[in-house]
Length: 234
Image (tube, rainbow, N blue to C red; front, side):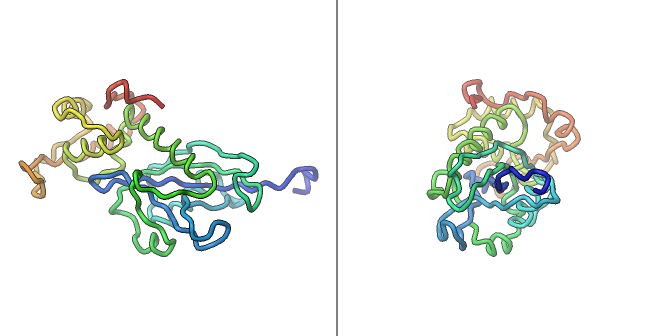
């Protein structure tokens, strides 16, 4: 700060919105704070940016500390900087959202941070402007999932088309036509038929697929049009 003697002290925080899918519902990983301010209330997982790290490195550090996972899907969402957003001190927050396979996280790390998976519909009141952050992330997830194949980041390595349909129905909270959805997914060429069946299927044993990782990475930014146009409004 010696080179900028007139500059004000402003803290830079990173808040992470972590989505998971349990096969039925989209869930948020939230922490119940055991420190002030707002001790005992619910919040997103966050922390302050270290002087020696980039924003993306700071987000990766925070996500790893909570989930034990690396190399997960994470995207910078928005910056929140209202003057009185944090009552303790002037703080600007850069928000990231992440998608993880819910069964892969480190349960002990989550427990140590007093964190819990909570469905979107049942999420509690959140501190500061964290609810605004979550609402922005939900809308962005809907927009991105309609156009790009990010939904696969929430699924296990092997999955069925009915499981994938349940995921998209959970994201948008609407029923989808089975035949049209299946046709769209298969037409992308992103799915590899493993030749195996899901023995846990409640109806007919459904075919197990896996993601074509090469095609996924090559075509990630293509517009796949998974959902009806009416669902792609941000």
